[in-house]
Image (tube, rainbow, N blue to C red):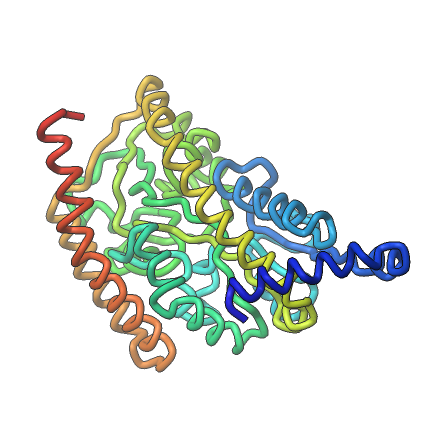
Length: 362
């Protein structure tokens, strides 16, 4: 059913329900449903738990309380990185997380968060809703009994926090660094000892020396996490996550048991969450960065030869997965969409921003 038909039928359905309200009140009350959503984010975590909380709010408001989400933080039902298996098996109804945490289940999941030298937030959204990405998310989900949904995007993520400056790619050799997804595998190619540690444990790992450095999200979220208290070198641009999506995947049996209206509510609430959360992040990163700098944080960019090393290692990591037919299908679809988007963005938005800075400064 297309959106216009859905809205028309929903309106007719609402009218019929109102007309029969005195007769059908008990059945209407019985129609309420609550979905248990496990998340990878501690409560109150900037950006990430913000997105999960907004999704919870939107579903309740859009359904007038008939469909609600019971959000669980890590440890309340399962651990932060156990949410995928919990939803796949039916232990929980849905999760809110970053799908690249689960590339050991299938490397194709990286594309539903971010891949090295991949798309910006806008390019990811273009692909997902207009380039076949959502259908591929569902095709991948069939393997694991899940319906795919995107619900959030943190935008371009920073290169990370370090105790010492990175002057060459050799500086990554032996570095104990936290970076999930295929980006982490890229740093592994450069000799880093890469670890995937949940967000709630990162401050302690960095302050204790268990990590030499880490990447998290961006100034707004990183400031809230307090990393500036234990590291003072901050690389503001990274190769690994140029537009990081978040996922709200639903157990497929649960999804199929929902009414069409409930499915639409979840999908549209997820889309609203992506738009809201990206705007929240971008609106607050600049001020957060200024506060970090006022606390003695030194902001830097990686040298060009380091970017070149990132690029060479990224190609190797991406090509290693091309033997998987579904990964190759997802990658080809993504890169085709990204090339189409870039052909216009480079001649419009990117050029405009370059000229605005040249003319007005900033």
